[in-house]
Length: 516
Image (cartoon, rainbow, N blue to C red):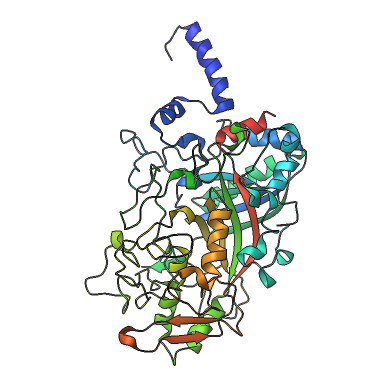
């Protein structure tokens, strides 16, 4: 701003007020003119992985609606001394190279000691009085969000022990209004910011905290020191296959898959399969996420591997069920060993396809079974339900997963320690029906997903499918015409403990809500 210019100052003040309401800023104007994503208006965890070792999730019930709306505004006021601030996708470039949307001339920033984000359920929007105060409020392309996770549970296989009647902490009962997620670099940061947040939640009766749960990266000891890993409780290295977004702020090693269009994860005008929620100030630059807490039956999984060792080596079975060896090496690149001669460079670990455009590759699943977990979750070039042709794209069904384990590292010498272990976090997408629900119902829990490749009609995802042990089956094709290996008696190795369908509002939207 030029000094000694009252006219310019007044104009800037008016523009600043307009910007706070409608999301205008210098960066936003640039984004509009270039078609780039407005990173400072989008919640950060939609587009970026924070790479922090611990997380705490708070489930809140709205108390006094007016005070709750005001508090939400304080989280995006820019005043860190007043309240922790929502983390945006702007300029997040610590710990790895700058992405294609980052300003290369900017110096790397100090890594923050916390990141904060929030989601609002439909009951939360009602409790915040948005339905009453916004006559034009409409989520007409998003019925699943309005209906909620509990009513849609059967569609995605959350039945029996995973059913809503067994969910913990008030999830699915209508009192699950707002989810606040705090990532932190250290236990001290997690504790201090949690204390600040808890005081803010309770202040003036804004919210009641009804549940909280922590996640933490699993650790391993090297040279007497403990280091966080990217492993999950089943023992696999996680975080290898990343969803690349065209024009997004993060850069990943190139692979065979085309980048996903940004409208699949950020609500923007001109998307192919939805209308941005109204009013525009509320819907634009938001997203949707399915929050889940999933218990993993590590003992049952390991017992199942050993129970079938007469048919197949337990570690090979673990690889066939997942699609990768436990160290992360994909079967598509190394079907016979987790330590191929010469190794596989890290940047190549995700650079493969199952079926090429000409039909070559591994169409029958000899290297990686067609029914394996990884191949169901992301079939790549495999012709499947919802895709089309060899080498086609399944991008319109892709998900971004932001999750972290909970519970201590599994000790095989003490398998029955009575400690619960699992994963908790978000599946992020712009259309819950076409992405999250489609993948779970059509690819994970249906045998017909693979098109021309006929799977046993009772087969489901061997790791996360909803299984009936009296009829479950996983078929492992063999090379050179040898008979397939068939393993049966699979149980559900995962159990949903909590779920919520959340709207992830933009910074503009949060300010808009606070001003109602």
